[in-house]
Image (cartoon, rainbow, N blue to C red):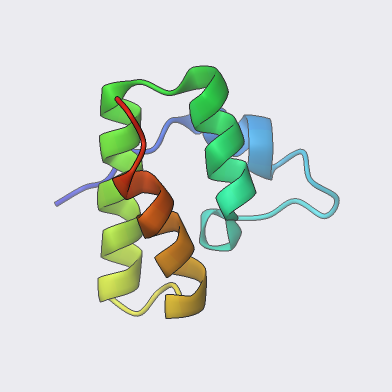
Length: 77
């Protein structure tokens, strides 16, 4: 299964950081800000699936993924 997050998220929130961050370093604040400005149902669903994938495959620590998963569970589409 392929999880596609918008390139705009990477360009708008992660790559402009100093220093730039990758997807595995995204924070809850990054996701909240992005979804508040550009969130759609499909974007929210993509984030939910992507974070679940990262967590379940051990690519993202529980301490990092759990706040993201909790937030995404309660996002209104």
